[in-house]
Image 1: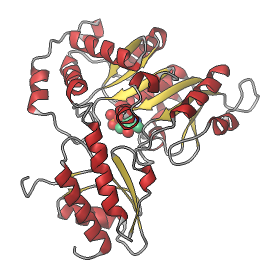
Image 2 (image 1 turned 180 degrees about the vertical axis):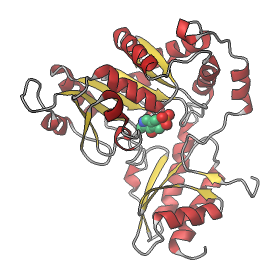
Image 3 (image 1 turned 45 degrees about the horizontal axis):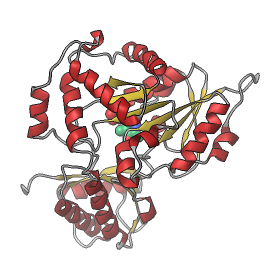
Image 4 (image 1 turned 60 degrees about the horizontal axis):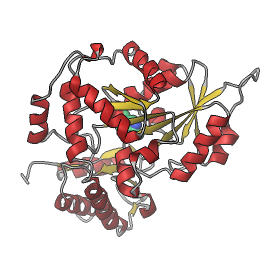
Length: 350
Ligand SMILES: *Cc1c(COP(=O)(O)O)cnc(C)c1O
């Protein structure tokens, strides 16, 4: 490694397309996707629909747009949407749910998960003169801010069954669903099965430069198509993105277990430091959310000192930082990064 190349653990979105992925992009057959003429987009949509066990899938530029289009498709303004505590939709979409879909989000549960009982207790019935009707439940799997934790599948099944009985739609924010499959051995179609609509991202652990998909029934995907256009997300020769996505599915899916092993490696090292609080039970995939003890530097100071020493991580709160492993960081780099973080936290060198 070049001594000046930082070890970038800010996110699994920082990966750069490899030469082989770039070749696939360069060679992609393309057409105008708004006429349905892009063969590579069509192939990717069919592939992802099949992987997720759904009738149809729709390509979108980003995971945030996938989430926003899902909300628009499955709700009406004024509706109530039940989500997990600290959901991506609550923290990372700049208020889009209120601005675009006009819905309110109700956070339930803890540490990224919730139970069917908690869901049932939070539902506001329709036809009440005061309550905003709950029309959608959203599950985030893996859960980003909770540290990449996996949502228990049996609970997802119970929640979606309860929702269906009450004519409440269900959406899976599966930006990192590939990591769930890698961590649990469950198939993507099993993970997606309980939900009406599922979002997945190609630009996280799979390493593509962009692109997300929504998958569901033909009818729901047809409605999503309209909202993609309305939000300005309908594009033209995006086969150049889709080719990267197909390449990523072919080459970068089975290796996700390496990212998980590297995250465990870092976690085990950090856990030995008295000034770092990490719950090893939450380290299930490729994300580490780490607390800093009162006698450790705060998050901003730790991030700045780590940056000066060639390790990039994100501040997630005043005394919380996040590190994410991905295909552009090796096992050796992860071990080195863990050593640097421990040294800074324990104040042994700066
Ligand atoms: C990253 C992420 C998104 C959004 O994806 P972008 O492509 O960054 O817009 C949505 N949901 C979750 C859980 C994510 O981690």
